[in-house]
Image (cartoon, rainbow, N blue to C red; front, side, top):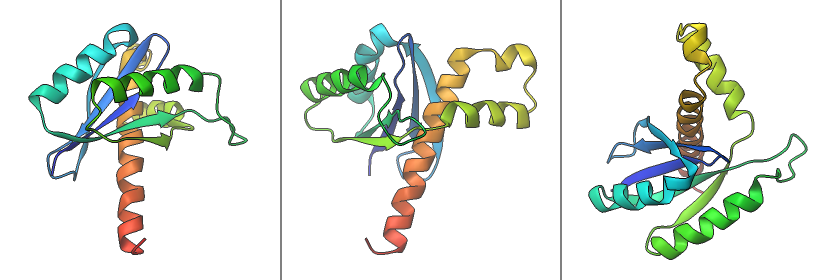
Length: 144
């Protein structure tokens, strides 16, 4: 088994999370400038066996794609060009920022730490990855 990498793609910053090699635990990895995220991912994949990349799919409350989806589709096309051997899939990222802020509050982080947008993006990527892992478990449990 290889790792699964999750991406919370943003206009300025991109949060990145990764599983352990057995795909049991989702961990925040880092937040990188969106302008350098492709180089970061390609470098990471050269060092670690990555089986799949999950990209957060931004949706509005009504289920329609958000305005950021155009940038994300362009990013995913570039991912396919640079890493054609690694499957990429989308996962609904609605409310991940809200959940990230709640996790920070529950974790006892002080106000200044909670205002760290890079940390919010990394936690959001971790929430996307955790949600993806849980959905896979449900599919396996239901033999789908």
